[in-house]
Length: 128
Image (cartoon, rainbow, N blue to C red):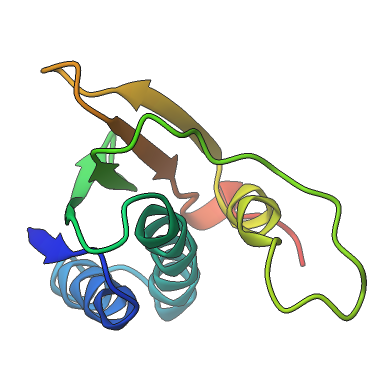
């Protein structure tokens, strides 16, 4: 699905995740965690490619949800040290805390990047 790289697209991406995973029969905890992760991925993409097209994808990989977002920026998301009162800067840490695996790969056409997260299900869910 293509979205415009603006803040309001974050909630649209989150709802797409909820819709897909609900229809695929996932448990509420997997759906909620996946929505949080997609929110963080798309928020980073909006910051990197504000006003430009983003493409998101929700699919299954060996029975587990995989969340992807493409943006045209070559700028890679990077973790930063943030203070306790910071309003942003924790996205990658949040993604890593919820996801089973994450990564960044170049797009097939060489323009931009795809940030992805493979979500845990069932017994391999993170302990919180």
